[in-house]
Length: 613
Image (cartoon, rainbow, N blue to C red; front, side, top):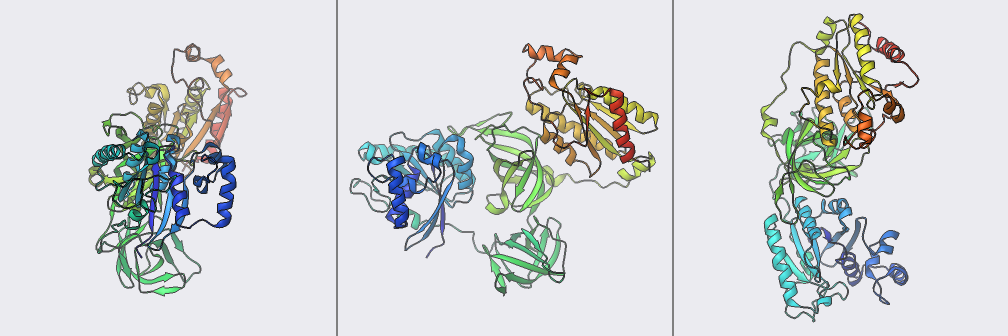
């Protein structure tokens, strides 16, 4: 029997995806009697087929799905025939649920793209095809559904097939199988249709049973991402993971990436004992001799075939978040079992899913596909997605909400990643700090306009200088006269503004200075990114708190008055949101405290946490 086949059923809304799966399950006798009775009862309440059983309800399990007659979440079902076992993902067709479709496509070997014969190819059909190809579907089957609704017309089918093959060719998909079907009647799903004698090809089920997965060729080098370091007792240390390529045997020489240290496999442990070798797909625990430093997210590879290591890449993305992608905004990148900080440094282009044209874009919005440059905060081991789905596919996670912001695939490392190396210097931050008799620190004041940040920052700077401290003050308005004069006040520009200032502050702390930063910095994710640049204890987030009414009443620059009249766009607190710090290191209530009292509190905290060396 061939290996199990994972396939995703995708297409636009109401193309009949759930009905196709329900019909396959029913005709393959994979529906239990009690499940069928429940579906018959639900059909009377939710069904769309009159007195007939609505087989789509076998898959649409959520109440909202049944009431609306649509698929919302990805539904997985397993079934088998005498020839093969299948795992099918029923992907939602609505554009707003594209993120769920991407989830189903990310593990699929084959994509079955449904098209309603009455409607033809729609933009969502093309979008799903591009996403399936992006995530490595090896084969695509076009199923033209609802042929019964067009009188089994051959010309309708041929027209849709010809158009789809043009699109598939532009995407780079070769050898698309096209099958005319009717999920309602079962024609050409599991048995050949008598209503379409002009079609002599295989049924959909036969096509899937015969699908060749084109598994990775023999001879690929060994790769295993480490998921867990197993230390059940002081005498055992093993490295758990699933082999994603090649084979490994006891005694083989291996290398740990990204560190580059080498060792040998001492034993291969599985759930019921040990074995002499392991191959792709096996979940094992490796022990090494000599023992070397290995952590979760490292990759154990064949010693003579290392993987690439880089911190800058070009990648394809499908954007899954309501808020648009902003260049420079920090995210968490999850690549195989490794998590690192990552930012998009450049949007190369957005893909027009209808025409395939590459369009210039300052941002990516919900469900957009695009190509970007990515930078991580440390080098990571990887393989291009075209070589390894497991080592080249990733997601971006929003730091503030932990929501998945994007799914992507690595195309290749950027040349600058290999050519630019960190230069080690003999004079360190610690030496510079000791020369100044202080501990370098970044004091980050955040709050709305007119909350009192600049006033407090200036007074603090004067006090620390009078005490002999070496300081520098970075003020939001002053920085925009030079370093950030090219930036406006859109969300994208605000993100880049904070990124630049945070990097400058890090350099100044490295010089041994106490850096005082006074910026609105309205977004939590950017403040979290700024904190991530510093060592523990070096960054202090100071929330300068005042109500919107108090800030508007002060309004020393007249900005609130202009914003309320609509003359300033994207003004924080009026149009653009200010995200209050959830756990600041210190909160200063400037409605209750004078600037001098605020500086006293802050100075006490600094005196206590920044003792002279």
